[in-house]
Length: 201
Image (cartoon, rainbow, N blue to C red; front, top):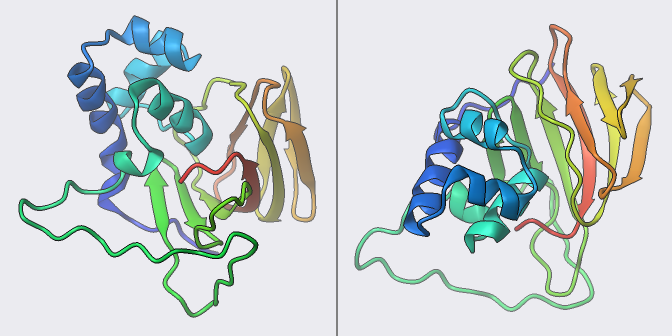
């Protein structure tokens, strides 16, 4: 069984949302209207009571004028040099298994990115480890498309108000504009291969 990785970012997403929201002088009501998420849910995320999925965080990031990565990355040290940006080919990327994968933790979910950044590429492939428990996310629709394939464990996937229990080998593919959410209501970690559009990072 693969356990989600512990990471400081697991507890930093909510406070970072609050920080960026206040920097822009927005109330929770204003952020809710801009992101399409409920005031109550955003309040719980900011206080660390609920976790937020990457796609919902993408809507919050857009509403606040930030990238998703800004909610995880530590601020650069004063005087630190800018990172070197290597131009990527527009038509492909090649990611070796031995390379250190970028990972993000948000509440009960650990996201391991499966592809290096590539200019002009729109798919965001990742492995998601979903720990049991936690608060269930509110079903939410957003732009794009997504696919999830269960590797191990079980996943309760709600699509347009209907719950579907997914087992290893099961998958779901949907237009992301349909309200949806996923939840692990078992006692074991669930591992899913997920591909979403547009790219979040």
